[in-house]
Image (cartoon, rainbow, N blue to C red; front, side):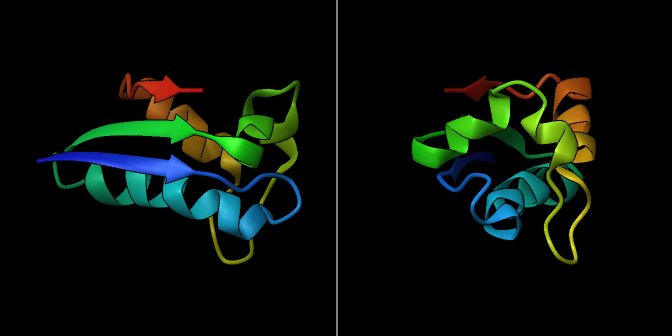
Length: 79
């Protein structure tokens, strides 16, 4: 199945920003879905400088780990 995740939150709400990345990396990829991630609105902040390295939502893996997993699986990320 093809799944598109839309991340629209940024540094103002790290938990909300992490959820689509977590679902993509630790949900859909794990069951073999074809995953695409789109960063829109405040979600674009995730690719500015070292923002992803510093963000961590409550109860979720650090954004840097989620992004690394998406990168390792060559998941397309559109901005």
